[in-house]
Length: 433
Image (cartoon, helix red, strand yellow):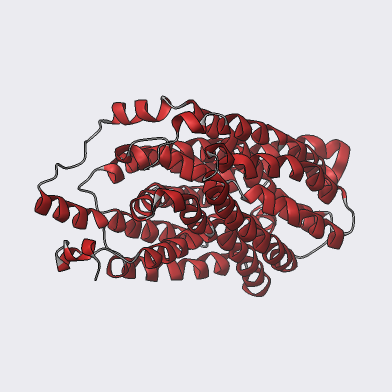
């Protein structure tokens, strides 16, 4: 037993950091599985309910993102409170979004499905800010990018499973069964979570009481937001991450539809192929992004963001060629490298977010970043892509989706520029603890 464990009463023992990371990553897998499964089901839902591309964009984006972002900051403020049990908060959130995912399968029209998607967004708003705060409290600063990147593996894994499981279940049983089936694991894990993880604040409070150390400073919401927005690096990161999310969410929905409409694959075939190939690429990129940020960030803090800046610059022309290809096999192979490069931003970005503010403002800093990413990215990405696709249809027919994706490929140069600009501020602003 080490000294820190000796100094902590047994009833307040903290969770093993590796167990914490694994459990939170699985929660995040379910988060993105339930969020992204609608992408592979969009075309079958559209045919069944008679929806336009703009309505698909609303369902896959704004209907979820609006309430996710509006509730994210007040819930994060609650998570930053020293008396809040963040594990309990995540458990309740998981139960809510899983139940609402099941209700998506019962929807009979656009309005009902949109309301159920709103419910998914309400539940998921309580997950990531609290999870990032827990991880940051448990991981040393020099390993923070890798730790948050490991949690971020939930994005490609969850998206992969959403495409594969959603596509296979849709082909076999229909889209309604697909929604209800993927909700079950989340409901089970929500019940188990309080028994698997412990809130480390209880151990910290006990240790402070024994040593006579004062409790952490409590910031008001106004003070916490001032702490966040006083960082120029944070603002440039928010711009970069928002553009990244805008393009990522838009492409994830409409690339699936491209392979169904233009390449003639079924939802099951598309989900299996894109899910496995691009899901693995996303996992590799997310993990390497965190590892490289920790490795090269030790030499120079600016290099924490070098990988996403250079990676997105390289990805743009390759991505364009992938959307241009008329053979689906060539198209998928060309999308592998850009997918990995575009996924490398997650760990470095959110590690910087946690390191640019005081510990008392970490959850709200993550929530502000998620607010920008999801309102602009998830809220507007699929929707504007759908609006543009409808606008191009009189000229391009079913190829209108391909036209939209051409522009999306080159717009990736914008976040590359802002990641580079943010990196120039890290020496002056990034905290060591």
